[in-house]
Length: 217
Image (cartoon, rainbow, N blue to C red; front, side):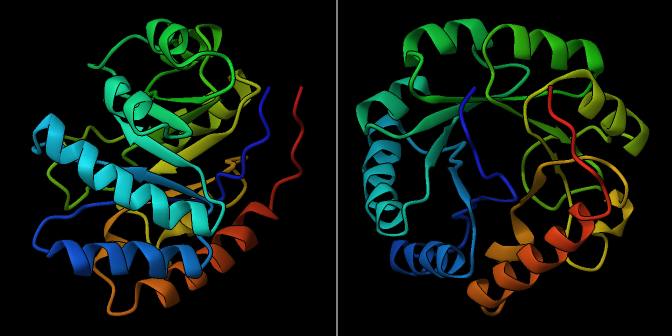
């Protein structure tokens, strides 16, 4: 099992930003303490996705933060990213693992205990569970109860991250639940200062996670 720090998992959204501003915001988030970075581009062509991914990867390497590519195993392999994240309607985890190999990261979305167990058995290194709250991103979301989140954390021995509308003011809902971290988009991307937002989020997330005694099988 790989050792991953998913305490502050930052997912990008380039909508409305020039490339220069986007890359600046990504770098500020990493400076602020983001521990894992996912590049998510739902509408770019394969070529454009790859070109942006290479630039983002250069930034991520400076801070030694793994780059995860959303959905696209081909893009992840082409730019030599550290990993890929597959959703419920994307490539099956088992196929992603086969293509990515054992040394790269494969993350998966899970909204049920059954799906979480299947993803783990097929080789997922971590899970994203949610949405805990409604989101403002373009991604379609179905709300997941904190009860289900708790059950998933207990059902699998890999890191489980909460995702969906989370910010520094509402993550208290996770108190007592053994999540490995939080995934955020808007709370960092749309902040006046992404670096400061990331730092404050990480500090609060770590406080929340200290409310649980972790036990990993």
